[in-house]
Length: 114
Length: 111
Image (tube, rainbow over all chains, first blue to last red; front, top):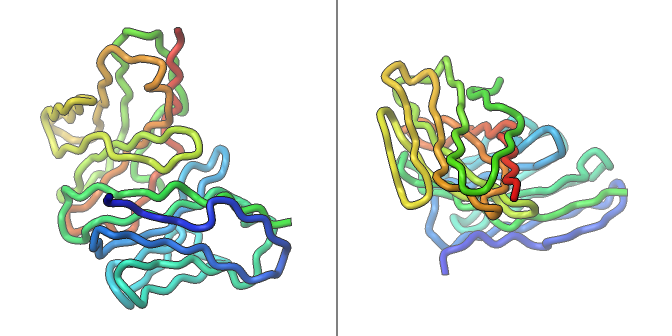
């Protein structure tokens, strides 16, 4: 089954404790992206990647890191999480060069930083 | 800076046709208009996409006038399960790149 898999689904952590949210897709998509969703602010893009070893900042990259060492994986890293990073996070993927390639989203990771 | 503008919320009764408008005054020549639907605690899912005139699929219709400065998503005979947030975004045919979703339109269907 074609899908984007995020782990974990729920995560509670404390300020300053490094964490990684994993994202994996099995559709051979070149493009991958991370979003955060907060009440009243909609979906905001954190980072995106057009292909392996190519990443770029979205609208709200501060406090986050990503890497794209393999095509299928695009982990989101919070080196020193803070309470303002409490949010619902979504990973998405699609083919790169076709306009007719909708984004496929994962089921989300709800992160709470205390 | 958001590339599209939508109403924050809408209500409709079951069985009616719902039209959600989206304004994109500065749409680029190479951009397509794409709509996504999001249920609570789920990721958005693709509904429909178009460049101009009318596109129809099994779920919805999309109307884009000749000037392409706006578009309308039409949901025929809505049911309670259509209650969701709907996002209108413009996508370049050069690739997805930096995609801004904005806040979307929260559609509530009333029994």
